[in-house]
Length: 69
Image 1 (tube, rainbow, N blue to C red):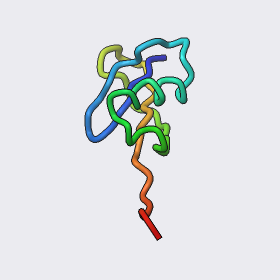
Image 2 (image 1 turned 180 degrees about the vertical axis):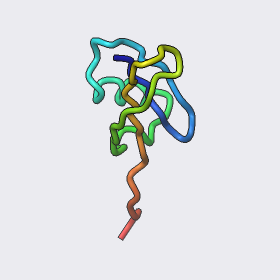
Image 3 (image 1 turned 60 degrees about the vertical axis):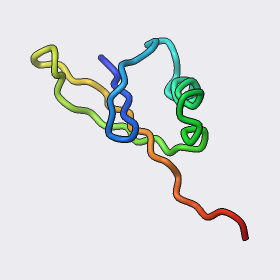
Image 4 (image 1 turned 30 degrees about the vertical axis):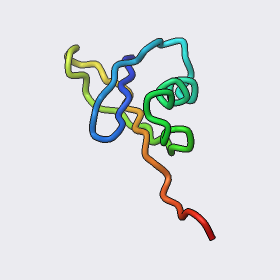
């Protein structure tokens, strides 16, 4: 089963299928610092490349919060 990572409307291929989702998120946080605290949502969809297969879509969403106080 293939994994696809989605952030800010863009899709990123799985960098390493041996990495846990949290490890991929931390790795991507090097390029997108706001992912350090991101929420993760997982879903399935039909594969775009292999008929009859599904792929796991892992979507990272920025956490909404307030600054200061």
